[in-house]
Length: 103
Image (cartoon, rainbow, N blue to C red; front, top):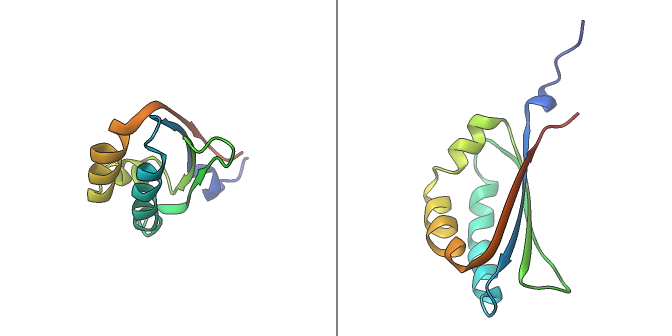
């Protein structure tokens, strides 16, 4: 019988953003405000945001949540709705997201 590993219940979310030209600094500042708030959420196991050195319009997100419910709760927080949905996403040229599970 297979053993249950709680790590396998974690949900890993990656996101790639490309911001509109000239919006790099604005989006970086928004994300610097957003990041510590997201990291403090109870269902967040890891949350990092990276800006491409060679292509500063590109941002990469690596997020680990306790499960799908924690990810859904993350998307309902005031900081997500205000900073991400309300301010950052309108400044994007491209947005991709993928979800993974640990093996």
